[in-house]
Amino acid sequence: MNSRTTMRLCVSHPLFIALLRVALGAVFIVASFDKIQNPEAFATTIANYRLLPYTVINGIAIALPWLEVVTGTLLALGVWIRANTMIAWGLLLVFSVAIFQALVRGLDISCGCFTTNPAAERMTLWTLVWDLIWISWGILIWVFDHGRYSLVKLMKTRKEKIASP
Image 1 (cartoon, one colour):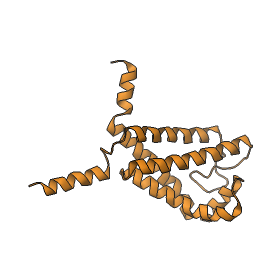
Image 2 (image 1 turned 180 degrees about the horizontal axis):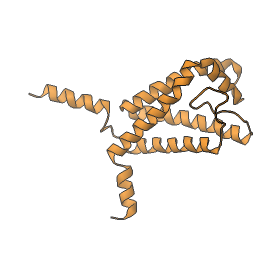
Image 3 (image 1 turned 90 degrees about the horizontal axis):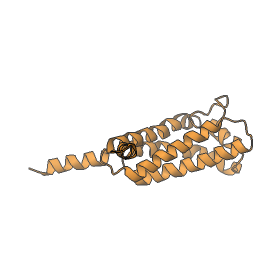
Image 4 (image 1 turned 90 degrees about the vertical axis):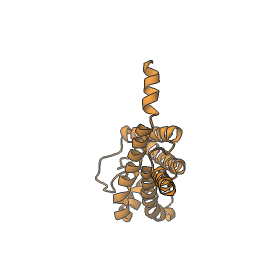
């Protein structure tokens, strides 16, 4: 067995993929906490990107963190894995584009990823790299996660045990 085959076996192992799914879910859950608690500050963070009209910023500042927490929770639990992976990809793609354009335009702002504090660490190329890493996790989850280690599988197994004599 060569090293490439070994790597593929490790990366595609159901337990590894489940851990990746839980980790990606946790990223979204943790990212939502401060935004849910401080929607006004999050609205300011969104406005600092100078991408959206002010008329939609407040609605996004209220809805987006809840979408993050729900998506993250369902991903971590392994519920509707493919649908929530798609939502996570969509969010990460939007975040990556926003971060990229801010870096290109030279905006000296906090990304608002995990905190709404305007004095937080400024956005760098590493901010974008992390988003791309998380997108790659989503790709692995999409390709290899068949729900073996998930709440849905656990409930199905328990139901079958109860139903059988």
